[in-house]
Length: 464
Image (cartoon, rainbow, N blue to C red; front, side, top):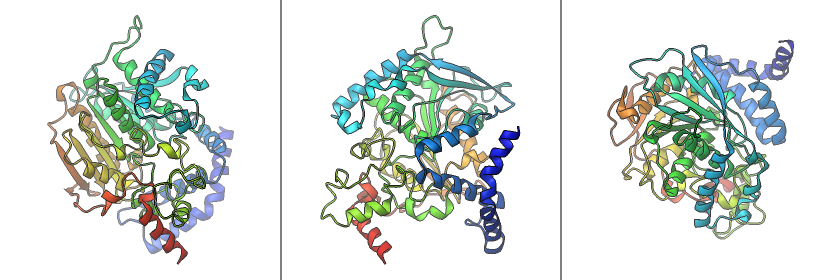
């Protein structure tokens, strides 16, 4: 207990000036967003101060700091959490499917930047945790309804433990049993390790080990769900399952999903004040910031060779520059969503990744699968994890409703329209999302930083 208190003081004492400044700004000059309470202003400020370190200290140190906070992560008293391990054979099966997909796209170890087939971590058991409610809601719960949850953390941080608060809420509101997994993290195990682990867990649900006593689950009763990087991994997994010819789940849900590792959308720059993510998003030690990319782009005549330019640093820990435009890495660039499953995307209007969510829906407005987008006014990144926010409760309730609607023949859910793109007010009222919410997105998708012209303009503006 004393050690835990000491750790808390070490983290908070240096931030006393920040707390004082945030308090002054909130009450004297007003909050960043009209609806923000003092608690939210302070929460975002403190989280930003922690997250800024990600781009300024060695990644090993950051990961160690995060692991310290996970040690005593509580289980919701209303829920039961039980640990399991997924046999290595499921990683082996998933790896074969991924290898075939990469062969089709001519992705080799040179493009990957590592020999993924010989990852020492692949020989370890995949750790996972089941979460279910002690008392089942008869109106919502249905045996067999399952959510496979993929946690966020920029593909480099967090675990099952950090996201227990949200998996228990999804179990309650979705009337489901939730399986969360500790997929392998970069930079030690970059792409496609996390994708392999997600598919391995999915195959485990569909085809459990013989004699294990575990009941096989109908894929149509499974929803894959994740937040932030886990949200991007969710959609990447959906695309990989489709392309591999494997059974698709009943649906997928992304909470503030990271869909574009190319950082091509404008909100990455315009929403810095209302979010806690590192300025200009997660990059590899900050060396791949948009400012540095723009400075290099300004020296080139065309953007054709920008991603392969020898002076361009590796931008992300998760994937090499050569693979940032792969749809399993950046689902936003996928040519189409035909043959996939119902989708729900939830984002905050104040977050850096907002435009990725909006463009993902706009880009696929004519695709046949069900696709719903909800953009919540004023909210920062993965706001559903802030349980003191009314918008968080609303978003999770809607996610639960979606989960129930697309599984178990809709038991406890409702019939879904094919498409909708809505803004949600802080009081829960809805209004249509404007058609030009992200202007000029068509010319930016699939291009690093939004393309040569965008980067040159950014460079010029920063020189001025």
